[in-house]
Length: 478
Ligand SMILES: Cc1cc2nc3c(=O)[nH]c(=O)nc-3n(C[C@H](O)[C@H](O)[C@H](O)COP(=O)(O)OP(=O)(O)OC[C@H]3O[C@@H](n4cnc5c(N)ncnc54)[C@H](O)[C@@H]3O)c2cc1C
Image (cartoon, rainbow, N blue to C red; front, side, top):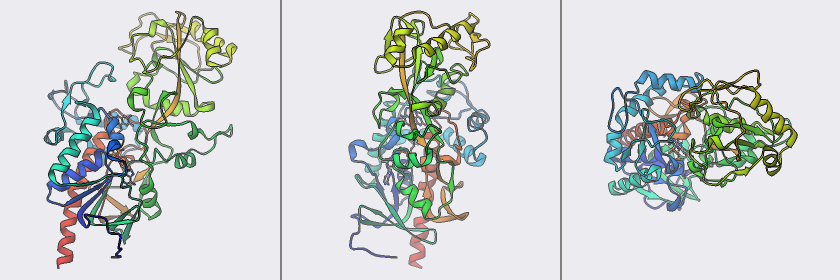
């Protein structure tokens, strides 16, 4: 083992956890409960702790009968089928079922660590049956877990990004943060994806046929601290990987959102109530294909494929009051030509698009709570549901940009959460959360599964790391 005069204060410990969001905290708490001494390295300052987790609202939970805040039942098979559908089969069934089953029993443990739940509110993507909402949101969950961790004696270090590890034949030896070395008997990597690394996004997405680098117009919905530095290090060190670097959870969000940390309030939820046009004033996808909660996560990618990576969600007065209003008001006009001029998109094409759409609308029994019969006829692309002419002023448009939630490229793992090198599991290095979510999410998404994955694998990784640290103690003592 190499040594350094720059030992990190408090090290060595049994279990070092790298990251400060849900997966890391679940790992740290579980390892500590199993008797290990634990240190957690959070890259961010204290005020920004909690990564993307601070923006979350809920956890998708399997349950066979109504359970406190969850109505009806959401059995394992239905959860699995939902996951199978959204991923198009790009998922590891054994690991996915492990996550699903863990979600059935985890809430009492979460409550013991101070997390409380509430029923879903209206406007929360119709999730009262499937998702348990955190009282006070993800920020309250993060604060509760940190409080519990500190009470249990987990050493928390802020402003402590790890940038590399010392590894020996797949065995973890130490981590480095800002030139200081932290030795530990076992380690859990839970440092998020690489969504906030704009250079890596640029490299992954490359250049499109128009010579643009689409990722330059992406906004990051969550933390700026998930730069993927350790993910890159691990891939370069030969760890087995999973997933495609361009696959990510991507939502079309308000183009005026900040570059980082805009969170959920930047969502624009009126797409299915109107039409969406690109910079040329043309529609490009069926806005009414399915319920918005099942479609919102594909629109980031759709907008990313448009020229300039921008689009506008256009509605008329009939839609107002039927969706959660965005934080900032949209661009409003009394006429469609005036709206086109305000948006600076080609007026003639925009008007042709809207006229063709309005003329193609069929059916009359509009009902936004079901897949109604209001559809277009003979229009490409079609609008399958909720198609009503856009003709009642005032007209409103919201500019959309791709908003990256988190990336799916990660480390391949198994039911023990071990990092693997050439198919061989590491004896003492584990991974949880976004850094391995690609094992379950090859593509697509269903609301609340990110927290299910991080909670299940965070706890497995914490348990396994505590056991590995015990083994390591015995190995050294022998
Ligand atoms: C706006 C928004 C809303 C969301 N809503 C939901 C929801 O309601 N339900 C749901 O299931 N999912 C939701 N998600 C997804 C969810 O946030 C993630 O799936 C989940 O939080 C991932 O947990 P994690 O611990 O892996 O990552 P994170 O919570 O992002 O934590 C990663 C941590 O690692 C730290 N870090 C990064 N690099 C380093 C380094 N080199 N050294 C040390 N620390 C490092 C970061 O600072 C951060 O603390 C949402 C995401 C966003 C952005």
